[in-house]
Length: 231
Image (tube, rainbow, N blue to C red; front, side):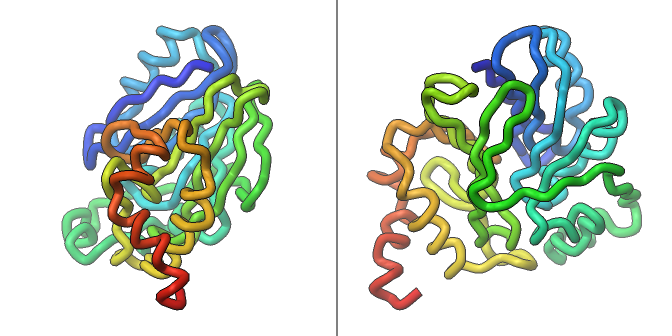
């Protein structure tokens, strides 16, 4: 499987292009701020044709370029229904400081074709098979996308974790729609159940593995204790 990742021009958001091989169709995960030129370069380099845009959640740093990317190619954007309102009005997910930063300068148009993601759904797009894990906490509609060995997607276990899990950390839970108890439950039930050899490709920062995070990430240790705390 071909995976090409690069950071957006703002907020260090990772945009990923995923395809079975060069010269095939692909999916674009989380096209953030100012990714259009770099995305075009990646698509041309590997001779790829986007078939869909997948969104791990509705925050603006992950969705900023979704409408031009989809509109230029007539493709569908996929998002969990609990974050659909953020795709319609991203200001609802902004913190006070970010709202002040954008102020009235944000001109936004929702993609014409938006499809829902459901927990446990197996997406079969562009010759790929990706499992959807609903993992609220950062936002109500946060999801992760997983590939499993032996499926059409290839032989490695991959998890595109969005802002659920980072190397040594997790996504913040103090923005509108965030919840630390929900995040701990997602870490316990969706992250810690994954095999240690799963390669994690997060929404920000470098890649990691579930095994590394299980051993070193303090939030995963807290999630293991969460049931005893009554979450």
